[in-house]
Length: 237
Image 1 (cartoon, rainbow, N blue to C red):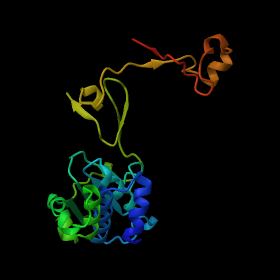
Image 2: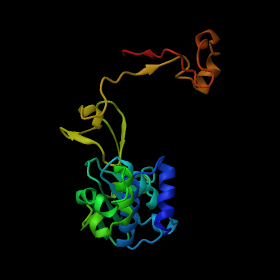
Image 3: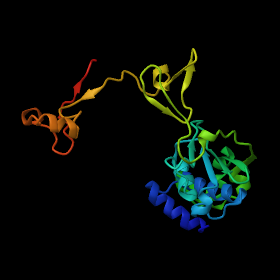
Image 4: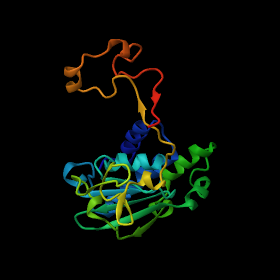
């Protein structure tokens, strides 16, 4: 694994700025990977053996993702919205897993570790670099409850929502009266008042073009690259 300073510099660049959370995240990831026996987690043969769960959507999460190479789109990074400064590192080959939590005591001890730094944020940043792992973190040996549909790889399970017809993957559906339903249709969703949006040319296809020449007047005022007008039409159907 690269040095702490190198990983911190790269992580801060990818994240957009250097902050105390970046220091915590880089050190958290380095410790977690070391505990599960992966010394080069971004290497192809090791990334396939790694799953990482982050419990916060803060700066620390970006640092953990950078150091480990775990990604949401590769299904090696899982976001658990717990609001806790913690991450769990799982070796899929050995089932060995550790949950690492940033301690609140570390924040209170910052002035003792970097008394010469006046600015609060800069003091925390420098102190977190200097603290021993045992001061900065709590570590728990855990067993991860892993379903086969949570693993990286192709989709193993699909169902169609019995209300809206949307395909739901990886067993994220819920069941009511024995029927599969997507979460938005249960009203347990992050959005509401959804209305379909349409614009001229929205339903274009080669087959339609061959059957009917495009009406240029209908496309007037549309964006030349997308066909989207300045004022989308809300469909009430």
